[in-house]
Image (cartoon, rainbow, N blue to C red; front, side, top):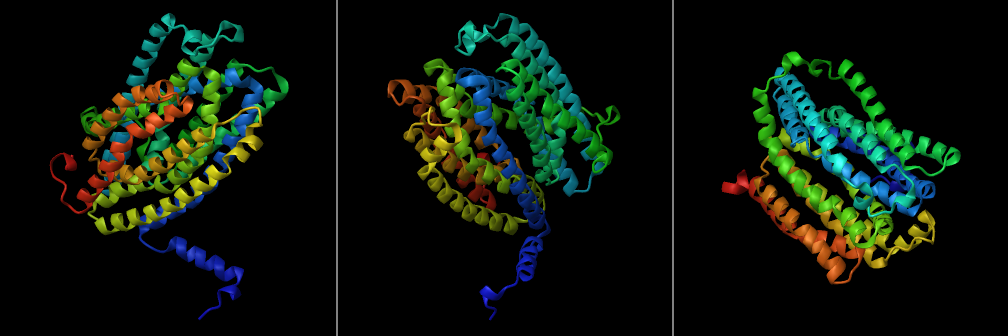
Length: 462
C-alpha cells in the first residue's frame, strides 16, 4: 500500500490528470470545462467584488443605486428573444449529436434572422414609449442629481440591442458543451470594464453617462471579436447566412423557445423586480444595501453554475441517446457537490459582517437578517438548479411553465407583504421571493424522478 505522505508532486499531478481524463467522453468534456470555468469565474467574482467599492466611490450611494436599477430593467429585455436562445441551444446540440450539420446551420441562420426582426420591433417600441416616461420618477430620485437620465437610458438600451444579436455566439458555444469559452468571453469584457472604470475614477467626476458608455461599449467590442474569431475558425461550417434562413425551422425553434420564453418572463419577475420594489418602497439607497448582500452570496450561485452549466447540453445529448445511467450518476454527483456549497454558505454567513466591513467600509450597514435570508435563498436556488437543468435539457418544461407563472403572480405581492405590512424592510423582499419559489422546489425533483424512471405520463412528460 502506497504511503500518501510519500506521494511525489509528479505522481500527484499524474493522478489529478488521470482523474480529469477518466470516465465517459461527455463527463471528461464537462470536467475540462468546469476546471477552466472555475479559474475564469474566480477572476470574474474577484473583478465583481473590486468593482463595487470603486463604483460606489465614483458614483456615490444614490447614483450607484440608480445604476443597479437601470441594469436590472435593461436585463428584462434580454428575455425578449422569445426563448429563441434556449431553443437554439437544444436544437443545435441535438443536430450535433445526430451529426446533421446542415440542420445546425439552418437553425443558427434562422435564429439570427428572427432575432434581428425582434430587436428592430423592440427598438421602435422603445423610441415611442420612452418619450412619455419620467425616468426621475421611475428611479425615485430628484432632478438635483444633475444627470441626463434620458441620454443614459438611450446609451444603455442601444448597447443592449447590439448585444442581443451578438451574444448568440455564446449560445452556440454552450450548446457545443464549451461553456468555459463563453466564460472567457464574458470575463474579457469585465476586465475591460474594470480598467476603464479605474481610469474614470482617477480622471473624471462621478458620471452615470460615462459609466453607461464604458459598460455598454466593452461587452459589444468583445462579442464582435469573438464572433469574427469563432465563425472564421471553429464554427466556419455554421456561419449565419441569408441563404440558409428557413422560417419553416422557426416553428421547431419557437415551439420549445416560446415555452422557455414564458418561463424566462416569470423568472424575470421573480428575481429581477426586487430592485424596483425596494426603490419605490424605501428609496435607491436601500437598493445599494440589498445588492451588496445579494452580490456577496451570489458567489454560491456563480460557483455552482460553473459546475452545472455544461450539464444542460450534456443531458440533451444523453437523453436523445437514451443514456439514463449516465444521467442518474451525474445527478447524484451534483447533489453531493451541492452539499459542499450548502456548508460553504454557512461559513460565508458566519463571516458576512466582517467581510462587508472590509469590502465596502463600515459606513454601509447590512442587516444580519438580510444576510440570513440571502443565504437561504441561494442554497435553495442552487439545489433547484440540479433538476431544472435536467428538465431543460429534455425539453419537457410544461410543468415548469405553470410553476413559473405561479411564482410570477405571487412574488411581487408577497414581497410587498413581507417588506411593508410585516415590517421586515428590504429583507422582506427576498423573503417573498423565497416563499413564492417553494412549489418549484417540490415539483422539479418529482418530475426528474418520473422522467428518469420512465414513469412520466401526461403533463409530467410534456
